[in-house]
Length: 413
Length: 81
Image (cartoon, rainbow over all chains, first blue to last red; front, side, top):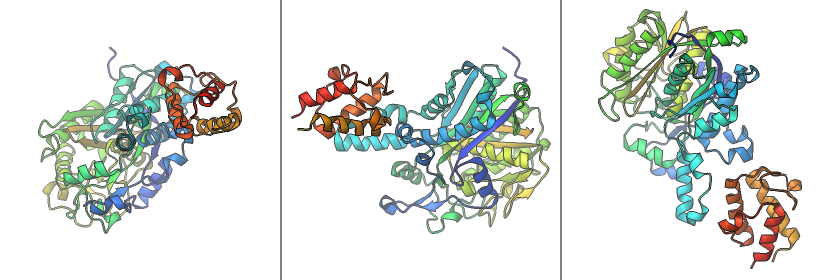
């Protein structure tokens, strides 16, 4: 086994999100402070306490051929859209990489819930013979990864980490390992989620995890703010192309940033509640720093997980403060995108990379009155408007129900 | 009772909906798998749609014998109510 010392770089980015149908429009909307959150107007929502959602800005069925789209769950559609953008941008397809050396790691939190629940309706109404033969390949949690693998012709292994809202970040960590251990030459990584449906909405609402600020959709997702009352469910996907620095340089690829390190821990505390002081989260950040060979003072920016839940945000603030200190600039971009669950870690990594590349830190929307929590008060959370900064390294952290913690360290190209 | 022509047209609509086959390509001599790129799962969908449209159920053991558009037309023709 070769020593895990190879530098890994990011050579392609893709996304379809509540802020835009691609990376450029999403980033522009993010910096402009626009919100992707709206109130659901369907009849079914009337009895729901939480009625907000961050829908895709661009309908995926308008970006994918109709016949192809009808065989793909919405979570697979967004995965393929983001992946094809990243793949095209990277130019890897023209680099002559053998398909056997191309791998995919693509996560999801919920998987094909729309297909599962839609086909359950068919079963109830019309009987078993009317259930679609595509039901299983559309609902399986490896569905987005498999669809992406087919789309880019990857034969070097297709993997699907499932760790709730850490899945997208976990995919990036797996991709890093695959390259370090020379199991592939190019790895397309990312996360996808599309589960806006009454059942997941009811389930999250029953956990009291969702914002009920129904009359103010754009103000509802407010990480670290005293008035926060839960997350807003979002949908979308983001993808990154990773490869070793030497081979990327050899083919003259554009490098957005380096993926310098990753850390993964588990809370070992509770199935859903985060450790109150973010003990496991902080350990993940520290592990990622060590993996990257950096120290806390090197990190200039954290794109926080910060979902806008009362307990999660303060636990994370403690984790960031304890592991990195108080000098880092913090962004909580879910204030504008909503929470993309299994895609969140991938999308927020894209944001962390763009912040490094452009040397500008996105603002946290709706942070009018920071929580009294000591760690929240101590952190430099960027708000009101994006801030120009000299950044060399950034952290993206993601946490998932189940106590999963992933931290990733990116550095400038 | 649908005429042969009506069956071919109806089958063409199904093939376009399910598998994106251009209506002009759905001619009797065409093989579903070799010419029209219709896979086995899509054949299941086509069978369901045929039952909806023509009231003709295609049992699984018969479905395996339907190789061409012409085979499907003949099966519907000889089994419609």
